[in-house]
Figure 1 (tube, helix red, strand yellow):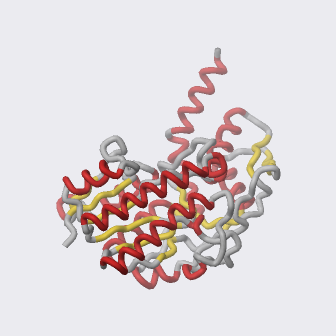
Figure 2 (tube, helix red, strand yellow):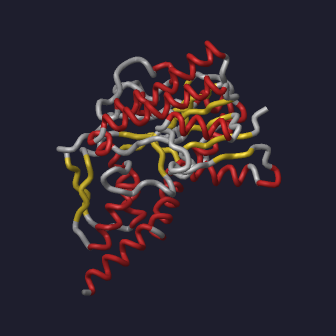
Figure 3 (cartoon, rainbow, N blue to C red):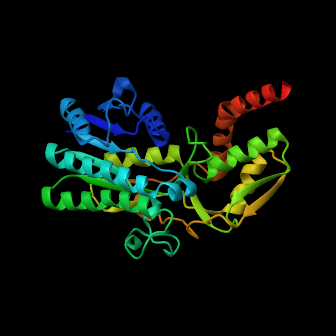
Length: 326
């Protein structure tokens, strides 16, 4: 029986949503699990011995592995080597620890970036090996794919229990809004808001606006993780998504309207588009452990924008106004 669960990356973007979902579903008075949620300075997934010793000393039975180095197109293009090495090292360390300490269950998160560049839409799990990923994201995608390969291999050879989920692009509260490293939704939110405060006539966005993406609210992904952890015990890949494909132009218009920015959108075609289309077939997740995303894109974007405006956005407004009063 599983008693102690380690969540790597518990203080990151998705990790915070998972911790909140655990609090909702498993109140302390009723909690059958003992959760460990160390910060990186308390347990470093890149340091095998540190990672191993934490798991061993705390009698950890299972791991939900969320820790990752990730970002948008710009970050992937700038640091492909770091993204590959750091994610691959964390993954190999986890796989080795699972084998050495005979962990009872390990749930790993892959990425939609692992799919081939021209996968037919919607992406089905059996298409995962039918080509090379989109070049910008390939190093990150392959590093995360190692978790799937390793989990399947260790399951076959040693009978270990691995689960591998492949979420589509996520967004929500606690996301990274740094324009140098963020994904598309937080980048757009920040750009439109700052342009509005500065009364700028236009906002420039990457690409030509034609690529499509599927976006999953991180709170829904947290629900999928808990459901799969408690109800699924196979190492094969399972897509986690929302079932709605949206192109960049429509996404930009939605966010622009929520922020109430009145200026023009300019598309910079000198910047990469990334993969042409992304949308997942999520039939398997619903069939195997009953997951179906509950948050619509409009609802999720509204919640995310409100969270941003109350925190990061408000601080920007204050600083900008102070500087312009001098």
